Length: 500
Image 1 (cartoon, rainbow, N blue to C red):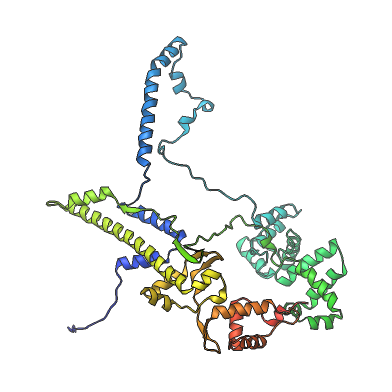
Image 2: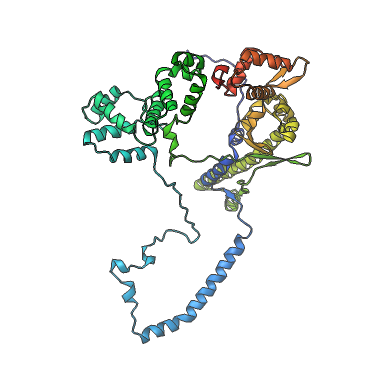
């Protein structure tokens, strides 16, 4: 049964312009140029500003073409007379059928403009990691079956050079995918051959096997007591070695601390990820293009917004005139559809231009507030000078929503006299010192990092001792908080920081 009722709701809806602005705020400087190009391709009513000298260049081309045509017309009669004297026939050149004598102009397509510029994509030269191993496999005297097994094993190596699948799984895969019947012993035999390839250590199933392969090869080439002891440590005391239980290794292996130190020096020379030693052709360098630049000009901070890829946008004059013409008088059905289409495109272009302008203003206002808030840091570059700052502080300062500040901070970089940093790195929680002073957690992390860096590596400081030392400096931090900060700084526990 249908019922009628009156209901009141409170909804918050975003306009298309607001959604567009939020999306543009998230885009860094690198992606803005591509986004503008995409909008120009999708919307014909949006155009980029042409260079000022474009008209003068076109006129110069016209004058030059006229001169060439005049010169060509003046010399036409001379060319015809010269051809008659020597009895040359143009048909002999135009109707050639010999493929070797086809002129270059007849091999070119006619669907390009004289203004088109050829853009070639450069490709990095070199050989990939897997291709390098396959080339070495081809140099071994193997039958077809073993060669196929070797190809499958190489194809299953990760980019660090490790084999993540067991031999039994490889036997099953070869049977199902290639209809190749084999055994674990045959796979192991081929795997041993691959483990002898360059770089040493490829084909290992784990770190222990990878290091042992390199040590045994080194023992064959240049045997020594240090390498022999390193092999014994890797074979028998690998777990103790990874946990740096050096006292247990010395006691069980019945060696001195000096012997252990020499063996560890040999182990540290090895490559734990042999696959990474070869550069991949697919790898590319990623460059950070800062969105802002802050410079110190005699104690005055100057902020600039990076707008090198920001073209001047405007509404197409053609579409504007068409819209003006169609708005006059009575219109037919097709004219109404054309008017609606053009108006929609012009409005969209207008919104996009306004959104770009608002984006630039929002970025500048946000960064100006951050620079003003962290002025001491931008002047000195000392991380201990960073003030506690959260998104709400900047949002209140520029009278904007917290989500807007978050979109600006999460994907933008700033270039300073001390390096290039992500904006969100300047935001941190606060902590109260024993004297009541409010400090940033970033400052505490920096002090903690300095203490650990200056510690005696033979007797590294525990978390309890670090908490005690910070308390002596006035920072009342609990041990579990020290452990959290240490993990955020990617610093291992004291036992793993120990060195001989």
